[in-house]
Length: 109
Length: 113
Image 1 (cartoon, each protein chain N blue to C red):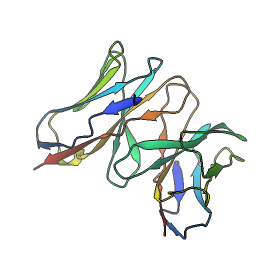
Image 2 (tube, helix red, strand yellow; image 1 turned 90 degrees about the vertical axis):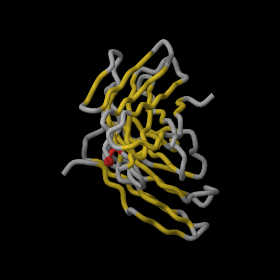
Image 3 (cartoon, chains in turn red, green; image 1 turned 45 degrees about the vertical axis):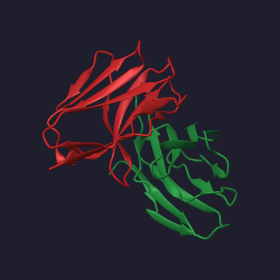
């Protein structure tokens, strides 16, 4: 079983749409959770950390369900500039981050 | 200007040659990491180092070597033993607190001809 699983997409959505990505992780000892964004041929960049109570940053909302080992990212009012690959990332303690393969989003005008 | 630098951005080598990729950070981060990314694939961990003069193998260490003689530097050598070295190589670093995440350099795109 893969440690972090994501739907690869692509998700093709019109501008202004709301889109949600899901991610599951297999290591129940995972303690830290993040969403990264990676543009084509660029390095991944931290989008947001994911906290147990859920958290919001502008148009982005992240949720964590520890019992189901499930993480989600919701993007509201999609912009063309949101087009990228979104990586779900987890870590147990001080071990290296474990990355999902990413979900590709294309926002269409 | 703080950050992680990788050089060069693009690198071409002939098959059978060893090549060393540079990674430098001035963020005073303790841990440093090397990943490889192939088209349509996720990031795979090659090596990582949590303190100076110490490093551990990641998931795909065969054909690679590293050193960590200074806190700010973590060079990666791609040896001729690496069977398919053409890829996008990413270096990352982070402070030691368990809740901190990693920050990436801009990457080096290696093509072996």
